[in-house]
Length: 555
Image 1: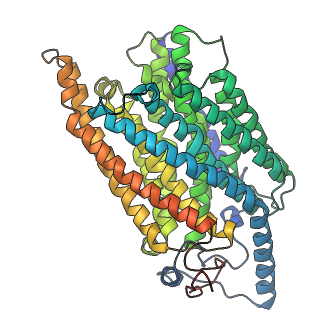
Image 2: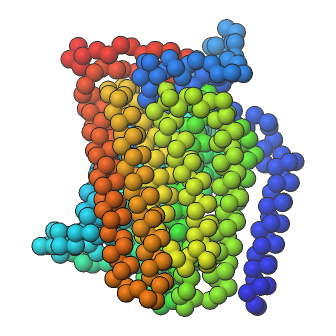
Image 3: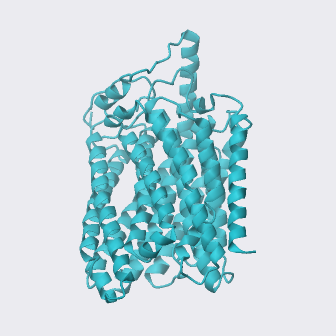
């Protein structure tokens, strides 16, 4: 079978599947009611935002109506029903509080570890003789420690913590199987500590994203399986008829990731060119089929809840989910352009990479239409700033990825810092920003204690935005120049290295600013966990225009 036939078949099947799915949406085969987007709200809650991370002044601003907004007027029976459901929500939050706190605490620790290793690695790119006295401090090991601390420490711990908290809310029931999740977190973190220790002493499987030895990966597999059990058990005891789109995303991610991780780490199975193909099949899919759906699940819950308005198009959210599932599976092959890989596989990867614009545009349009008329709420909601910016970065990252997959762009960007900038745009600009916002929303519910210093939230936001802007722009420009220099046969290879030096220095500057933001974030988290600072108790559930005034902690 030739390349044209394979690509044409793939394209026809994809388009046919899309049309069938769109037709099913039009016929409401998957969504029997027009109010499916309202399932995350209690009766009478639409029109009232929920933002526990906001200060008193910010909550007053959030409570101001926008043009065309109508707040429901409830009779006595409806108010009683709403209060009853809100009380049940509080109990649901309590059922997941300790488990969520365990996961988020682990996430904070790994964020600091990854930040330290990442900043040190960045400095070494332009100061190669810095910290070379110990083998584990060399660039090759520190950079790998940074990657794995992010990929298997900060990112999954944060995502799973938010997922554990969201499950009872979305299913309107108590969390079932919390002990399995905690045991899974213990095994996972034990495996990660052992894996990073192996990398530090030079023991590695030698494939990017899959460096941890497979013998240690057994702990992560067992831990991940245990963490997934509460999803199954809680689904069985749900009190809702309709599963909101966030459950679709989280459920799919928790199903996809074990398959990806298990196949990627099978010992003595993948060799040579096949190993390279599998490596990037895993490396790209763990981004698109685990981190991405977990973050999108958070966006689809927190954004409507904060502004008090359902998503504009629930069918469009389902379209984004299914097209992500349809098109993402083979996009990793575009990292192997120019390698000894079958041409049809590369071309198929390019086609699917370009087709990814469908779910991305679906999400982007939905987010914009949902926020239309509500953008002023960004001034008042700390969580919303992170969530909306993260959603915008998802759009930018995905479109950039589709363009980067094209051969004409890839020939310049391949093997350069341009690709590193793109990877950080997805995993940091999109995923981490969303997780930061989600943590700010969730923790007051977990601790029954509001953030003691709201000004630190704003400082964290602007530090990471400024730092990441410098980081991303510097690497993008430096990486593109690096690619052009490597393609110029008249220039020695070392010229392609020298041209990147000022941009690598800007990367370290941006990384240092981001690191400061992370330290503030972690310090604020610890202060809240210890209930240190001004006493701001009891994040309001609903209809609150102000919070209790700050009281000294000792009062």
